[in-house]
Image 1 (cartoon, rainbow, N blue to C red):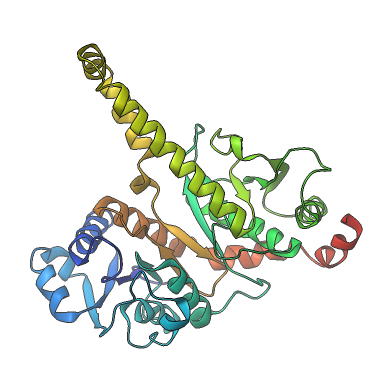
Image 2 (image 1 turned 45 degrees about the vertical axis):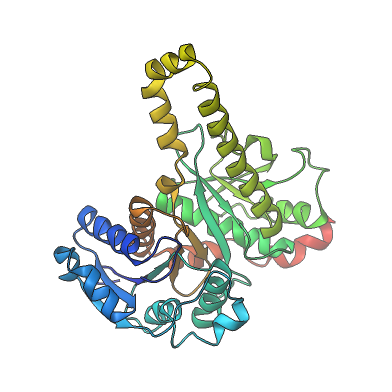
Length: 350
């Protein structure tokens, strides 16, 4: 990438509407004044919204789009509107070289399908994976993938996910040798599916990778902070992610209920408010927003549909980091560390 990074924004995607998207883009611009934007969507609405963001207007161009991909649209239907929808045109801008990355808060399935069809996968990557950052008790967020892009995966797919996840962790967390583990039903070597065991054998047989493979991890240890990247198929990963999110919401609701149950409890809450503010900040999904489709010939970041402006800005910041560190080149370079070993190991491992 040369010059200031330019991010294409699907301005019409997401649950909260155009105003929240523009507020988030404007915040990202204040945080990084080098950023430039392509705002894709209804031109009249975008121009009206920019009236309250003159600094953003000066750093943005508008790409008119006549259609919006709804959250209920099936990927197959969305694919027919790549050339007319705000989501499709944002991704197309990346392919055409008019933008360095695309960010959308829209339909995840449609975004995945459009991105894969438009950008194609990197050489050596069979399938792209959806990766996200999750909070932990450690110093760094956890990179977890795949989170739903591929419900079924073979051993080679899992190895590719490990390589891509490690490259991502090195970019966003500044790690040299990320600790990588495969999600499993136990840490013992004999446990797990044949695909998981074969993937573990491949990773152990490839010592030149820019990662440290530490074997397996169980789901109850995902938040402990003793691993940097966790790899699974998309079916398992999505269930694990939703379980973590649900547990966090349950704990928050239980604490709220406990601290409003009596006058004494309410007094205790007042004294504990700083600690609970810190807890809320750590668990706020807006502070970890920005899932990435890794393995494509271009950068596409998925912002949560219900993200607030701070969450949108965070997702844009993730995209800018990936542009700056040339994540595609990192992944391509790391794939050479797998070599021909991956084609021979699975049969011996099963």
